[in-house]
Image 1 (cartoon, rainbow, N blue to C red):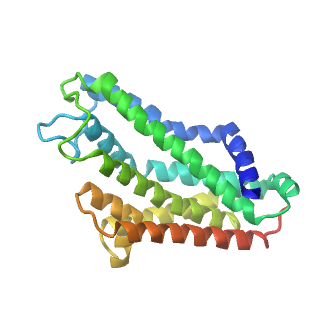
Image 2 (cartoon, rainbow, N blue to C red; image 1 turned 90 degrees about the vertical axis):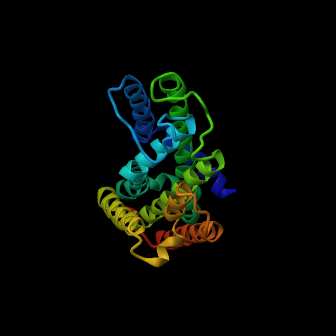
Image 3 (cartoon, rainbow, N blue to C red; image 1 turned 120 degrees about the vertical axis):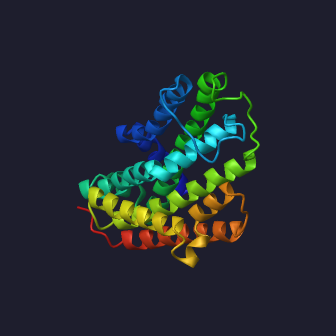
Length: 259
């Protein structure tokens, strides 16, 4: 019950904060890109293209997700939001107000994380809907669109699973950011978490470590390539790691001196 109460408080705070608006940037960029592609001002190609060289709606959505994921756009924005909304409150002493109301520190970490995940889910959904809307508004009747929703290259469940594992991968590093943010300033916590994210992404994409085949990002890449393996174990492992990180953060948070 405490977590639910704090969760509602954190959701209101998150939605009111102006820095949360940066999560709208990908959706805005998608709309601009869709218009640019339809006019020929922007050329966009990739493995998600259909066999005849034209985009179906799912092709377009998948290609945009792969593009933004490869650039690390979502990772940068989500780690930035997490660092400044947790470490920022600790550094400024703003979190004292929540502590005075609740009295317990442990539930605050979980509630904050859930609020951030909810905001992230909303941003992901808006991005996907904007990509789909941009397709039918600008791409479907252009020279690079075929007007179809379904794709010969990928099906809807695979697209949803791919996005879901990207979400899980980023959620893990949001949990890492919460842990680091206990001891470092917001900007330094952001830098450390971002470097760790990019380092792990590099190791995954280069297949440098066999163990990383059980990472959520690796599963996402495999799904796009048509490989369905280690999906359930990776899902459970990612959830377990996130819970362990949150428990550790909650435990250490009780020992942090709030100024």
